[in-house]
Length: 328
Image (cartoon, rainbow, N blue to C red; front, side, top):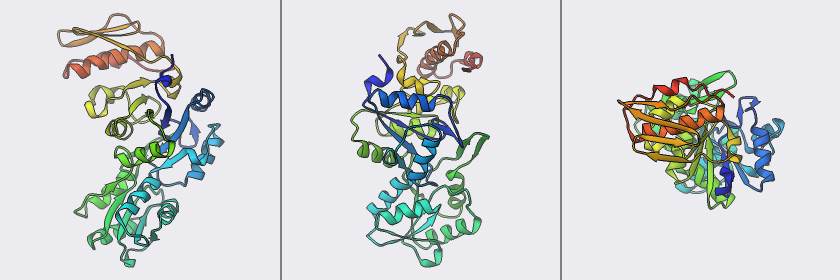
């Protein structure tokens, strides 16, 4: 039995799960193709509001990932729907993001503007790689003037093929230091984006695949959705050791191909946890492994057993995970 057999749809974060900047994550295209051949509904969910869905679909196709524009749900789309729920038709919205965000706002019957002197009814921020300080200043002035404040997402960083770079959250934080209100946020970990995706897919039991605890896993938990954490993007095994209940995934796998593999089952005992052939135990406040894992899958089994004990017994020494390199 494959992990995916328990679900009727697979939802994927993009950055760090399917691709890293211009390059596909190794195995992602084959994994998604296998899921489609298995009859699984697929949705691509991204907090990145900078590009229109058609550009995202074209990027995926260029990387060999089978995708159609209807499979893409962006935080710009969810943000626009959230704006429409709070504002009357035709209301003006200052766009502090890309033209793709402006297009989504216009598509829901609102009037995007680019200058704060247009006295907008609302401000919406989304990631823009060409953001300037004058545009952030304009957002501050509009919010201080009474405009409602919305944000597509608050990711502090973006994973790329060359490392982490500042994300939308960094741009939003620059505005936050100058204004009093908090923005209403559409993207993960807030519910609107995943709720919009489930609505469009008509899914009853989806699983979400992500590489970030603070957006992907917490976002799935916030809407009661199971999740698969993968190690191809931003967060690491050390982050999992430290996470509280709000950010604990339902499953772990090295990459998204884990959906087509047997799920990791845990057997818990008194101070012990077994995952397949790997056993972790607590003794004198320290976790140890009964045997040294050698393959990647054995290391992931060992990590899952260790995490079960760490989450049950906060404060125990879990330095044994330092020896798990998780290299394919």
